Length: 98
View 1: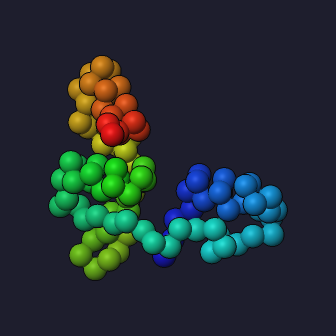
View 2: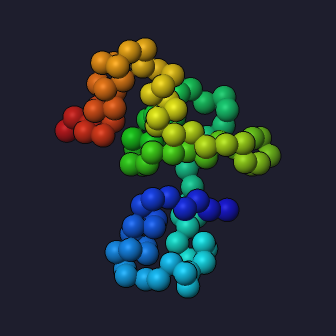
View 3: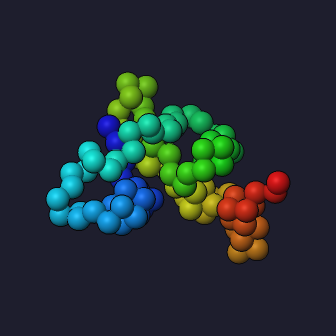
């Protein structure tokens, strides 16, 4: 199983000046996926995203079956109640304190 992200396309196709018409999905997809279960908290999901510098998580059931994809935008819509809180949360995610 794998996923093709915007980063995969820009890093493995455009940056290497390859012709996408001659490539297969398996040539560029990310195979080392970070997955979560539906029972995980949004806080834990956001922490996983931050630790792995990713913006999406694959949601799998107990049999490792695909249920969906959770994005940082999905989490922000749920967690942030107003535009200011949403902007602060996004800024902290993109520009973590060092």
